[in-house]
Image (cartoon, rainbow, N blue to C red; front, side, top):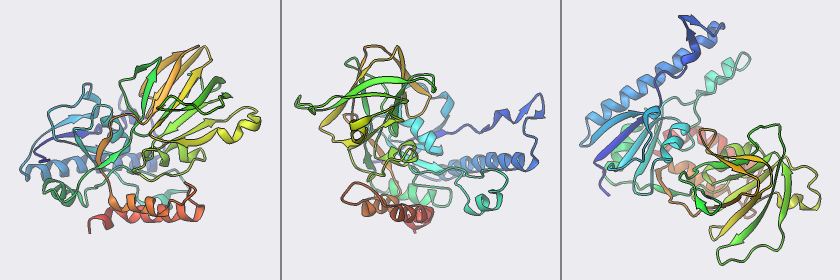
Length: 345
């Protein structure tokens, strides 16, 4: 596929509009204020740099702010997102499997900065799990794509049906089904169903703070923080976890597992209110008592260019039990810090 027409999707330049109100800064700590202002400058400089590179290439392109994107993206060969994983996630909700995606991490975390400022505040910047480029290697990565030296990875997404009707949005990272009030208990049941109609013999009944389901790409995000396991990036399996189950008894072992592409997770909702959150809080759908929710990987893949080094690291360290040991995960964290420079050296 020849890449000739591009859309440059930009994280807003004014990253912190709350910094000033009526000309008065809301941040009283001078060092924090200086840090946030430097982040804005780094992001602006990254946008300018990417635009200058694109102007040198035999492509047609136009920029658009992430905040102005409201319709499906058509008539382009590739979307380049400049921001972090959040910008790429936002773009994914407007892209089918006919458009390729490249993420540019405009504001990567600086290890020395985190260490120097750890006693004062969290100086972490962008992680960029899904971003294959930074300003340091953007031109080389772009040339590799334009000259056909690399191909995109087909990353799985989550399809959701509410009362048998497909939702318009597909999750690239994860979905969370819960009561809209985080302090409220959610009541639901679920079972794993094969596409041939067979179901697992037992329905699991739950009272908890909700249900999370993630893709392989999303297994590094909230699921991992909650105690889940990492998955190979290109796996089509989905992982689920019941959040904070109340007195699960003998069903505890069934509260966290994975299911295959030829299966779905069928949920019955028994609370008066509920919400399906897709890739965070920006995209959500209301559910109510008696609703049924079907979750599967039966969604168009996202054709995204990934840092191949990180993909290979995850696949190599993933063991036969579908888990990473603590030692192996530490290896991943170390290797990931090197992956941007190593992947295209």
